[in-house]
Length: 401
Image (cartoon, rainbow, N blue to C red):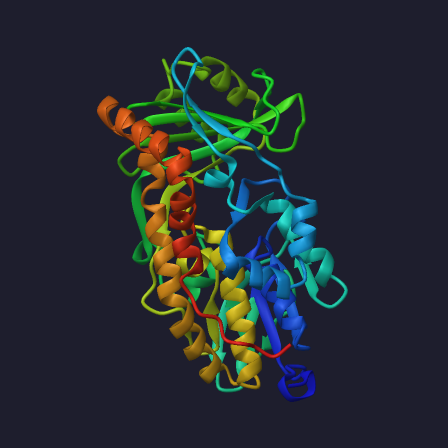
């Protein structure tokens, strides 16, 4: 097999989104010579974000063949144990790092940066712009942008996240695809008042929880994660002040570090707030357009979304190479190979909200007992295999090198 036989130098591909799925696909496609453009509505590559983890032999194989496994280890968080605490801060359950952080963990922004650095000399990145319209034709996809001149591409890939604009343009309104999971999550930076050093603490009350973690060793800064159970809320995703009001109301009277966290929230300039939800689409491709990552099979948290995104990118690029750029053949194979794997990983995300914020005191005690048992030495290896089961439930073909 040679790149000449399987090369994609004749193929032009527009990718919408430069978080993780987009740069991952760009990296995979340029290995086959495809001409790739990535458009991202943010003015620059987004830094920071939550820490994401990889686990099991499938993730390792894909990241190794992408050439970034070693660099991820260099930039990993090296997060240690995370402890479930009582209201007075005393430990209740000690969770080993591999339970929460997999084989290796890295900040989402750092991962995107690695892939961007590997591709920016070969990929056209357009920041501060987004797709306005898409018209699928037999000859290609005619694309207009909010700012840039109109262009035609052979293929368009929507890798623009849970609230994908590309998906809305081609597959219908978000309301048809987003499945709300009865919880919301927020994250923002806070002072490291507990003196955490690459460790975390989790405190739960019925229907709400606060987790504090220090992932990078900075003695002054930590990250707060807030989860609460709720009926569907109506709010403006651009109204940060309104989101802060929601969190202040929901976490009023919270024990442990609750008052300090809400005080830090007032000044936070990096708030992330969203529903814990999943994306379910009837199909991942339509004509010359395909969906990838959270836009296709997303889960806000707990669904190994980053791992699924890089595996999906690897499969999509590999199938395009095997098919010589024939999108009909490649898209069908991509959908066939990735759907069951992605849905299996999604199922684990349904436990994210109840894990952090069980609805009753009885459920909190039950969670603590279960994880205390699973963290014990006799069951630690079993639990590791259990957490890797979904992440390894796919047989990858040998794609061209």
